[in-house]
Length: 368
Ligand code: GAL
Image (spheres, rainbow, N blue to C red):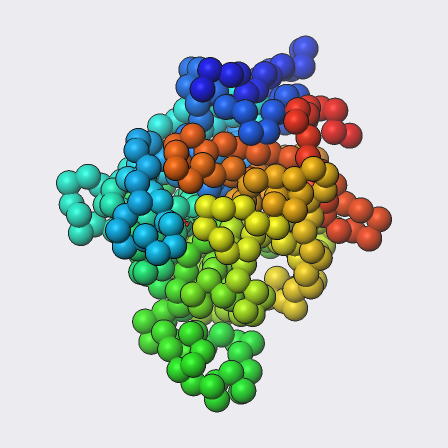
Protein backbone atom coordinates (compact mmCIF):
# COMPACT_ATOMS: atom_id res chain seq x y z
CA UNK A 1 0.00 0.00 0.00
CA UNK A 2 3.02 2.26 0.31
CA UNK A 3 4.04 2.36 -3.34
CA UNK A 4 3.40 5.67 -5.02
CA UNK A 5 1.19 4.88 -7.98
CA UNK A 6 1.28 8.18 -9.67
CA UNK A 7 3.56 11.12 -9.95
CA UNK A 8 2.32 14.29 -11.52
CA UNK A 9 3.87 17.35 -12.95
CA UNK A 10 2.18 20.57 -13.88
CA UNK A 11 3.68 22.14 -16.97
CA UNK A 12 5.63 25.29 -16.24
CA UNK A 13 3.63 28.47 -16.44
CA UNK A 14 0.17 26.86 -16.30
CA UNK A 15 -2.18 27.04 -13.37
CA UNK A 16 -3.13 23.73 -11.83
CA UNK A 17 -6.72 24.93 -11.75
CA UNK A 18 -6.91 26.27 -15.32
CA UNK A 19 -9.83 25.16 -17.50
CA UNK A 20 -7.77 23.01 -19.88
CA UNK A 21 -5.09 21.89 -17.46
CA UNK A 22 -2.34 19.85 -19.11
CA UNK A 23 -2.58 16.14 -18.56
CA UNK A 24 1.02 15.32 -17.80
CA UNK A 25 0.31 12.65 -15.20
CA UNK A 26 2.44 9.53 -15.19
CA UNK A 27 0.29 6.47 -14.73
CA UNK A 28 1.40 3.09 -13.44
CA UNK A 29 -1.50 0.70 -14.03
CA UNK A 30 -2.14 -1.75 -11.22
CA UNK A 31 0.06 -0.01 -8.64
CA UNK A 32 -1.46 1.52 -5.52
CA UNK A 33 -2.68 5.00 -6.49
CA UNK A 34 -2.46 7.60 -3.73
CA UNK A 35 -4.65 10.67 -3.33
CA UNK A 36 -3.25 14.11 -2.46
CA UNK A 37 -3.25 13.15 1.24
CA UNK A 38 -1.18 10.05 0.57
CA UNK A 39 -4.06 7.56 1.03
CA UNK A 40 -4.96 4.89 -1.55
CA UNK A 41 -7.79 6.06 -3.80
CA UNK A 42 -10.94 4.10 -2.97
CA UNK A 43 -13.33 4.46 -5.94
CA UNK A 44 -13.97 1.10 -7.58
CA UNK A 45 -16.21 0.26 -10.54
CA UNK A 46 -16.15 3.98 -11.15
CA UNK A 47 -17.02 6.61 -13.68
CA UNK A 48 -15.63 10.06 -14.42
CA UNK A 49 -17.17 13.40 -15.23
CA UNK A 50 -15.40 16.46 -16.61
CA UNK A 51 -16.97 19.71 -15.49
CA UNK A 52 -15.61 23.26 -15.60
CA UNK A 53 -11.93 22.33 -15.71
CA UNK A 54 -12.07 19.49 -13.21
CA UNK A 55 -12.39 15.76 -13.48
CA UNK A 56 -14.58 14.05 -10.88
CA UNK A 57 -14.01 10.37 -10.22
CA UNK A 58 -16.95 8.58 -8.59
CA UNK A 59 -16.64 5.00 -7.40
CA UNK A 60 -17.68 2.32 -4.97
CA UNK A 61 -16.22 2.85 -1.51
CA UNK A 62 -15.04 -0.65 -0.66
CA UNK A 63 -13.70 -0.70 2.87
CA UNK A 64 -13.11 -3.46 5.38
CA UNK A 65 -13.29 -7.21 5.44
CA UNK A 66 -14.19 -9.16 2.32
CA UNK A 67 -16.69 -11.94 3.06
CA UNK A 68 -18.74 -14.45 1.14
CA UNK A 69 -22.44 -14.17 2.03
CA UNK A 70 -24.15 -17.56 2.36
CA UNK A 71 -26.61 -16.60 -0.38
CA UNK A 72 -23.73 -16.16 -2.84
CA UNK A 73 -21.79 -19.35 -2.01
CA UNK A 74 -22.80 -21.13 -5.21
CA UNK A 75 -21.22 -18.52 -7.47
CA UNK A 76 -18.51 -17.02 -5.23
CA UNK A 77 -19.95 -13.51 -5.00
CA UNK A 78 -17.68 -12.04 -2.31
CA UNK A 79 -18.56 -8.64 -0.84
CA UNK A 80 -17.59 -5.89 1.54
CA UNK A 81 -20.27 -3.91 3.33
CA UNK A 82 -21.27 -1.13 0.94
CA UNK A 83 -19.64 2.16 1.92
CA UNK A 84 -21.57 4.26 -0.60
CA UNK A 85 -20.12 6.36 -3.40
CA UNK A 86 -16.82 8.18 -2.99
CA UNK A 87 -15.64 11.13 -5.09
CA UNK A 88 -12.21 12.50 -5.96
CA UNK A 89 -11.44 15.63 -8.00
CA UNK A 90 -8.48 16.51 -10.18
CA UNK A 91 -7.59 19.31 -12.56
CA UNK A 92 -5.18 17.15 -14.56
CA UNK A 93 -5.96 13.44 -14.01
CA UNK A 94 -2.80 13.26 -11.94
CA UNK A 95 -3.43 14.66 -8.48
CA UNK A 96 -6.67 13.40 -6.95
CA UNK A 97 -8.20 15.18 -3.97
CA UNK A 98 -10.57 13.14 -1.83
CA UNK A 99 -13.95 14.92 -1.81
CA UNK A 100 -15.39 12.38 0.61
CA UNK A 101 -18.40 10.10 0.43
CA UNK A 102 -20.95 11.91 -1.75
CA UNK A 103 -23.68 9.26 -1.40
CA UNK A 104 -23.25 7.39 1.90
CA UNK A 105 -24.65 3.97 2.62
CA UNK A 106 -27.15 3.70 5.47
CA UNK A 107 -26.02 1.82 8.58
CA UNK A 108 -29.06 2.29 10.78
CA UNK A 109 -31.83 0.91 8.55
CA UNK A 110 -31.40 -2.61 7.10
CA UNK A 111 -34.52 -2.10 4.95
CA UNK A 112 -33.15 0.98 3.20
CA UNK A 113 -32.06 0.57 -0.44
CA UNK A 114 -28.67 1.97 0.57
CA UNK A 115 -28.24 -0.32 3.60
CA UNK A 116 -24.61 -1.44 4.02
CA UNK A 117 -25.61 -5.07 3.45
CA UNK A 118 -27.02 -4.15 0.05
CA UNK A 119 -25.15 -3.62 -3.21
CA UNK A 120 -24.21 -0.11 -4.40
CA UNK A 121 -22.11 -0.64 -7.52
CA UNK A 122 -20.89 1.02 -10.72
CA UNK A 123 -21.95 4.62 -9.94
CA UNK A 124 -21.90 7.02 -12.88
CA UNK A 125 -22.69 10.74 -12.67
CA UNK A 126 -23.60 13.10 -15.50
CA UNK A 127 -24.37 16.81 -15.63
CA UNK A 128 -27.73 18.05 -16.85
CA UNK A 129 -27.26 21.46 -18.48
CA UNK A 130 -31.04 22.19 -18.43
CA UNK A 131 -31.66 21.51 -14.75
CA UNK A 132 -28.07 22.32 -13.68
CA UNK A 133 -28.13 19.15 -11.56
CA UNK A 134 -25.61 16.35 -11.29
CA UNK A 135 -27.46 13.07 -11.72
CA UNK A 136 -26.03 9.78 -10.50
CA UNK A 137 -27.20 6.31 -11.49
CA UNK A 138 -25.89 3.10 -10.01
CA UNK A 139 -26.63 -0.58 -9.63
CA UNK A 140 -28.72 -1.08 -6.48
CA UNK A 141 -29.26 -4.61 -5.32
CA UNK A 142 -29.90 -7.01 -2.45
CA UNK A 143 -26.89 -8.98 -1.11
CA UNK A 144 -27.73 -11.91 -3.42
CA UNK A 145 -27.98 -9.63 -6.49
CA UNK A 146 -31.58 -10.79 -7.06
CA UNK A 147 -33.32 -7.40 -6.99
CA UNK A 148 -31.34 -6.10 -10.05
CA UNK A 149 -32.43 -2.48 -9.80
CA UNK A 150 -31.20 0.98 -10.78
CA UNK A 151 -30.63 3.64 -8.14
CA UNK A 152 -30.79 7.38 -8.83
CA UNK A 153 -29.42 10.29 -6.78
CA UNK A 154 -29.13 13.99 -7.52
CA UNK A 155 -26.98 16.92 -6.42
CA UNK A 156 -26.48 20.64 -7.08
CA UNK A 157 -22.72 20.19 -6.91
CA UNK A 158 -20.35 17.62 -8.44
CA UNK A 159 -18.90 16.99 -5.00
CA UNK A 160 -22.30 16.30 -3.47
CA UNK A 161 -23.97 15.63 -1.24
CA UNK A 162 -26.17 13.57 -3.57
CA UNK A 163 -29.76 13.20 -2.39
CA UNK A 164 -31.06 9.69 -2.91
CA UNK A 165 -34.17 9.67 -5.12
CA UNK A 166 -35.27 6.03 -5.49
CA UNK A 167 -34.50 2.64 -6.99
CA UNK A 168 -36.56 0.81 -9.57
CA UNK A 169 -36.44 -1.65 -12.43
CA UNK A 170 -36.41 0.37 -15.65
CA UNK A 171 -39.10 0.40 -18.30
CA UNK A 172 -41.89 -1.31 -16.34
CA UNK A 173 -44.74 -2.41 -18.59
CA UNK A 174 -43.03 -1.20 -21.76
CA UNK A 175 -41.84 -3.42 -24.58
CA UNK A 176 -38.38 -2.94 -26.06
CA UNK A 177 -39.03 -1.31 -29.44
CA UNK A 178 -36.78 -3.69 -31.34
CA UNK A 179 -38.23 -6.94 -29.99
CA UNK A 180 -39.46 -9.22 -32.75
CA UNK A 181 -42.85 -10.91 -33.08
CA UNK A 182 -41.08 -14.25 -32.70
CA UNK A 183 -39.64 -13.15 -29.35
CA UNK A 184 -43.07 -12.05 -28.17
CA UNK A 185 -44.51 -15.35 -29.36
CA UNK A 186 -42.04 -17.14 -27.06
CA UNK A 187 -43.91 -15.41 -24.24
CA UNK A 188 -42.71 -16.01 -20.70
CA UNK A 189 -39.71 -18.04 -21.91
CA UNK A 190 -38.07 -14.72 -22.69
CA UNK A 191 -36.79 -13.08 -19.50
CA UNK A 192 -37.69 -9.57 -20.69
CA UNK A 193 -41.32 -10.59 -21.21
CA UNK A 194 -41.54 -12.50 -17.92
CA UNK A 195 -40.57 -9.40 -15.92
CA UNK A 196 -42.33 -6.84 -18.11
CA UNK A 197 -44.95 -5.59 -15.60
CA UNK A 198 -42.40 -4.89 -12.84
CA UNK A 199 -39.61 -3.55 -15.05
CA UNK A 200 -36.42 -4.90 -16.56
CA UNK A 201 -33.57 -6.39 -14.53
CA UNK A 202 -30.68 -3.92 -14.41
CA UNK A 203 -27.26 -4.79 -12.99
CA UNK A 204 -23.87 -3.59 -14.36
CA UNK A 205 -24.43 -0.24 -16.02
CA UNK A 206 -23.10 2.95 -17.50
CA UNK A 207 -24.49 6.30 -18.64
CA UNK A 208 -23.62 8.06 -21.88
CA UNK A 209 -24.48 11.64 -22.85
CA UNK A 210 -24.63 12.27 -26.59
CA UNK A 211 -23.64 15.50 -28.39
CA UNK A 212 -27.28 16.63 -28.44
CA UNK A 213 -27.55 16.33 -24.64
CA UNK A 214 -29.66 13.16 -24.74
CA UNK A 215 -28.55 10.61 -22.18
CA UNK A 216 -28.68 6.81 -22.32
CA UNK A 217 -28.52 4.08 -19.72
CA UNK A 218 -26.80 0.84 -20.74
CA UNK A 219 -27.49 -2.04 -18.35
CA UNK A 220 -26.90 -5.78 -18.22
CA UNK A 221 -30.41 -7.24 -18.21
CA UNK A 222 -32.30 -10.49 -18.67
CA UNK A 223 -30.25 -12.44 -16.08
CA UNK A 224 -27.14 -10.73 -17.49
CA UNK A 225 -27.64 -12.46 -20.84
CA UNK A 226 -28.72 -9.44 -22.89
CA UNK A 227 -27.90 -5.75 -22.59
CA UNK A 228 -30.42 -2.92 -22.91
CA UNK A 229 -29.87 0.64 -24.05
CA UNK A 230 -32.50 2.92 -22.64
CA UNK A 231 -33.10 6.60 -23.38
CA UNK A 232 -33.38 8.94 -20.37
CA UNK A 233 -35.85 11.77 -19.84
CA UNK A 234 -34.69 15.36 -20.37
CA UNK A 235 -33.96 15.70 -16.63
CA UNK A 236 -32.00 12.38 -16.70
CA UNK A 237 -34.02 11.10 -13.73
CA UNK A 238 -35.94 8.31 -15.45
CA UNK A 239 -36.22 6.28 -18.64
CA UNK A 240 -38.44 7.66 -21.41
CA UNK A 241 -39.60 4.13 -22.24
CA UNK A 242 -37.70 3.99 -25.53
CA UNK A 243 -35.27 1.10 -25.18
CA UNK A 244 -33.68 -1.64 -27.23
CA UNK A 245 -32.21 -5.08 -26.59
CA UNK A 246 -28.62 -5.35 -27.80
CA UNK A 247 -26.01 -8.15 -27.77
CA UNK A 248 -28.79 -10.70 -27.37
CA UNK A 249 -27.63 -13.78 -25.44
CA UNK A 250 -24.00 -12.56 -25.44
CA UNK A 251 -23.79 -12.29 -21.61
CA UNK A 252 -21.93 -8.98 -21.56
CA UNK A 253 -21.50 -6.74 -18.54
CA UNK A 254 -19.33 -3.86 -17.25
CA UNK A 255 -20.31 -1.64 -20.22
CA UNK A 256 -18.32 1.50 -21.10
CA UNK A 257 -19.52 3.65 -24.01
CA UNK A 258 -17.87 6.44 -25.97
CA UNK A 259 -18.24 8.27 -29.29
CA UNK A 260 -15.48 8.77 -31.83
CA UNK A 261 -15.81 10.37 -35.27
CA UNK A 262 -19.60 10.05 -35.20
CA UNK A 263 -19.68 6.36 -34.23
CA UNK A 264 -20.59 4.79 -30.90
CA UNK A 265 -18.16 2.35 -29.32
CA UNK A 266 -18.70 -0.02 -26.44
CA UNK A 267 -16.17 -1.92 -24.36
CA UNK A 268 -17.50 -4.56 -22.00
CA UNK A 269 -16.61 -7.85 -20.32
CA UNK A 270 -18.00 -11.35 -20.33
CA UNK A 271 -19.90 -12.47 -17.27
CA UNK A 272 -17.57 -14.20 -14.78
CA UNK A 273 -18.06 -12.24 -11.54
CA UNK A 274 -14.81 -10.84 -10.12
CA UNK A 275 -12.71 -13.16 -12.31
CA UNK A 276 -11.28 -11.61 -15.46
CA UNK A 277 -12.23 -12.71 -18.95
CA UNK A 278 -11.55 -11.49 -22.50
CA UNK A 279 -12.91 -7.97 -23.05
CA UNK A 280 -15.38 -7.30 -25.86
CA UNK A 281 -15.69 -4.27 -28.09
CA UNK A 282 -18.34 -3.16 -30.54
CA UNK A 283 -19.29 -0.27 -32.82
CA UNK A 284 -22.61 1.18 -33.97
CA UNK A 285 -23.81 4.02 -36.21
CA UNK A 286 -26.96 4.33 -34.10
CA UNK A 287 -26.87 4.10 -30.32
CA UNK A 288 -29.80 1.63 -30.32
CA UNK A 289 -27.94 -0.60 -32.77
CA UNK A 290 -27.34 -2.67 -34.71
CA UNK A 291 -24.04 -3.07 -32.86
CA UNK A 292 -21.22 -4.90 -34.60
CA UNK A 293 -18.81 -6.76 -32.35
CA UNK A 294 -15.13 -6.05 -32.96
CA UNK A 295 -13.57 -8.63 -30.63
CA UNK A 296 -11.18 -8.22 -27.73
CA UNK A 297 -9.57 -4.75 -28.01
CA UNK A 298 -6.67 -5.68 -25.69
CA UNK A 299 -3.18 -6.21 -27.11
CA UNK A 300 0.08 -7.50 -25.63
CA UNK A 301 0.88 -9.74 -22.72
CA UNK A 302 -2.18 -10.64 -20.66
CA UNK A 303 -4.58 -9.36 -23.34
CA UNK A 304 -6.59 -12.60 -23.39
CA UNK A 305 -7.75 -11.90 -19.82
CA UNK A 306 -7.89 -8.10 -20.17
CA UNK A 307 -4.65 -7.78 -18.14
CA UNK A 308 -6.49 -9.33 -15.19
CA UNK A 309 -9.11 -6.56 -15.29
CA UNK A 310 -12.70 -5.68 -16.08
CA UNK A 311 -13.89 -2.52 -17.84
CA UNK A 312 -15.75 0.21 -16.01
CA UNK A 313 -15.50 3.43 -18.05
CA UNK A 314 -13.96 5.13 -21.05
CA UNK A 315 -12.85 8.68 -20.39
CA UNK A 316 -12.65 11.19 -23.26
CA UNK A 317 -9.70 13.47 -22.41
CA UNK A 318 -11.14 16.97 -22.18
CA UNK A 319 -10.24 19.30 -25.03
CA UNK A 320 -8.43 16.55 -26.97
CA UNK A 321 -10.86 15.00 -29.46
CA UNK A 322 -10.01 11.41 -30.36
CA UNK A 323 -8.13 10.78 -27.16
CA UNK A 324 -9.65 8.26 -24.74
CA UNK A 325 -8.55 6.39 -21.64
CA UNK A 326 -9.82 2.89 -20.87
CA UNK A 327 -10.55 2.65 -17.16
CA UNK A 328 -10.48 -0.86 -15.77
CA UNK A 329 -10.68 -2.53 -12.36
CA UNK A 330 -8.30 -5.28 -11.35
CA UNK A 331 -10.49 -6.92 -8.73
CA UNK A 332 -9.05 -8.73 -5.75
CA UNK A 333 -11.83 -11.16 -5.01
CA UNK A 334 -10.67 -11.89 -1.44
CA UNK A 335 -9.52 -8.38 -0.61
CA UNK A 336 -11.89 -6.15 -2.56
CA UNK A 337 -10.68 -2.97 -0.85
CA UNK A 338 -7.23 -3.48 -2.35
CA UNK A 339 -8.57 -3.94 -5.91
CA UNK A 340 -6.47 -1.83 -8.29
CA UNK A 341 -7.12 0.63 -11.10
CA UNK A 342 -5.70 0.09 -14.55
CA UNK A 343 -5.87 3.07 -16.89
CA UNK A 344 -4.60 2.58 -20.44
CA UNK A 345 -4.74 4.73 -23.58
CA UNK A 346 -7.09 3.71 -26.39
CA UNK A 347 -5.70 3.79 -29.91
CA UNK A 348 -7.54 3.00 -33.16
CA UNK A 349 -6.17 0.62 -35.79
CA UNK A 350 -6.33 1.34 -39.55
CA UNK A 351 -9.87 -0.06 -39.67
CA UNK A 352 -10.94 2.18 -36.82
CA UNK A 353 -11.13 -0.59 -34.21
CA UNK A 354 -10.24 0.41 -30.65
CA UNK A 355 -7.03 -1.09 -29.29
CA UNK A 356 -5.87 -1.18 -25.70
CA UNK A 357 -2.21 -2.05 -25.34
CA UNK A 358 -0.60 -2.95 -22.04
CA UNK A 359 1.81 -0.40 -20.58
CA UNK A 360 3.46 -0.76 -17.17
CA UNK A 361 3.98 2.99 -17.01
CA UNK A 362 2.89 5.76 -19.33
CA UNK A 363 2.60 9.50 -19.46
CA UNK A 364 -0.48 11.32 -20.62
CA UNK A 365 1.70 13.97 -22.25
CA UNK A 366 3.73 11.45 -24.25
CA UNK A 367 0.82 9.61 -25.79
CA UNK A 368 0.70 11.77 -28.91
C1 GAL B 1 -19.26 -8.73 -11.65
C2 GAL B 1 -19.74 -7.31 -11.87
C3 GAL B 1 -19.32 -6.49 -10.67
C4 GAL B 1 -19.87 -7.13 -9.42
C5 GAL B 1 -19.41 -8.57 -9.33
C6 GAL B 1 -19.97 -9.28 -8.12
O1 GAL B 1 -19.68 -9.56 -12.68
O2 GAL B 1 -19.19 -6.78 -13.03
O3 GAL B 1 -19.76 -5.17 -10.81
O4 GAL B 1 -21.26 -7.09 -9.45
O5 GAL B 1 -19.78 -9.28 -10.48
O6 GAL B 1 -19.47 -10.57 -8.03
